[in-house]
Image (cartoon, rainbow, N blue to C red; front, side, top):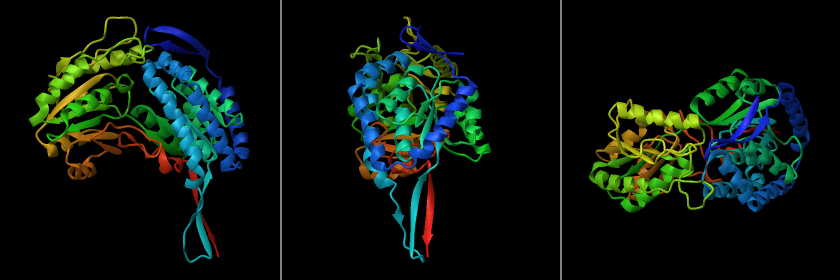
Length: 454
């Protein structure tokens, strides 16, 4: 089977790759396990040096790697370069902090000495998505390798150039062959890879159905998983908020990565006293977004990553309209080559509409009116997802109270939801479980071992 890179800006095939055979995949697993036996014994200083090398390679090659991201999935070149820079940051963060985070924890008990140590597990499989082809992988790989594990990557089939480039970065940095391996395979082999006795755990970032499949496969073999799944993040604006700043950030939060981000703001919940003012300014800014060639730095919105995803997005809008939603701007595919969709705002939403219930992966914003702050939080929580939330108000003490009521993995007050190597990242409900990043993330794939000495 051929795995292809298709440029979403024009729909043309850039490159084709041959999928690995089952025998080649299992050979890679054996090689990874062999490498783990020695990699686990390396000291943090040696690991840190190699991870610093990877960070430098990323920074030095940010334009080159950024172009790969833009060509493969259509993100604007400015955002693509920023993604590569962020990957260098997470490499530096764990290179600098892993030893301290994973150092023995002394605990006073009835023993002469007792402590907790953190031992690597072995081979960790990462099933990664196309929307942030570098960032999703590096935020997994940097802590996993620094903890002494080895990595297998099954990347999304539409970003093979990114998958190959990531392995090359680790090899150039000096990591041993087998410490990080890209497997160019489709989804059919994932279950067998998980079931291999030398694969110890798996992490997935992606859709809810994909997460359930991987979690089920791992569960049947009692293997640890971390799941970062979809999101329908609320962007709540209360009446005392700075409306102009909220509108400006709202457009960025909805259109980041061409609207294809699990933590992109998707449901804009505005209290009724400022609903009309916010809505008018928001629609004006969305309508005036510069859509075009993602390789041009002035472009603000590029294409949807694949045509099937574009058609699915269009159906979600049409189904919502058929049930009574109103399109305030946009609402259709742009007539040009490639997979472009207009910046869109839909209103008059209610439960049962895709634009209210589902994750909308593209430049479509759902505008929802709330009676007051209590109603706004209730609407925010009226979702099967719980990844991130943004809350806008001048009353910080009130915001802190409301943050405790919002059902999500993070709440950003007067700011856009984002990931940061220093902070834990993940969700609740159908947005998944477990955490990536910070000291919490690096401890997901270690054996937390008690040592008790009389």
